[in-house]
Length: 259
Picture 1 (cartoon, rainbow, N blue to C red):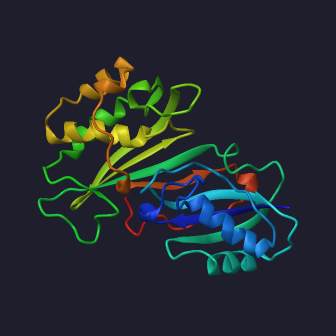
Picture 2: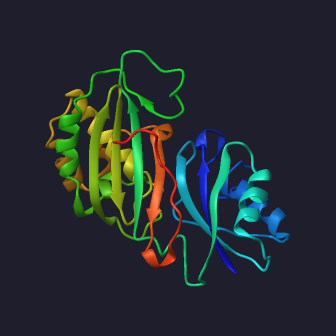
């Protein structure tokens, strides 16, 4: 049978999602825990890979197994064998044609910026601290210039393995709640570091160092060297992946604050 899982993790102490030799990875810890419950070696497929330091609210994975377990037993058994910075939020049997990666219709990310003069002892592993004042309205105006079907080469990491830099962004929304700025990005798929590089362009615009139009100039250049910095990983969250209703996958509460 094929089983889908909702997985939540704090990426601070992980070398990213994907299994790597002699590295602590989310996939490595998760597969080890599932294998114990299934009583055989397990290989997982995820909705999206995340880098070192990046978090996930509802990563979706699937795996195939001959083991028969109740959904509750998958959840409790896997969690009992996971470290505290990963947990399974739900488990559900799915049809064999379901793929956590290829069945996803879109993916949702949120990047959080902590914007005040003083640093935060609470949020330093959850947000990017930017002490200069940011104009979220200018950041929102610039973000709208990136929506649509474009060549995002200027926002692509050098080590990106995607076959094409052409991607479609459905939504970019910049909102502020007191000292916190959220950048929500929605699209079917993304290039390596694409969201973090988008934020790296929006922040200088919010600081007033660059005009709103700079976002479009960077996009049209198709040149990564023309863009801003790659924003740090700790502010990035893989929020969720959307799937066709036929799969009826559970959902979890993403954030306590409604934006």
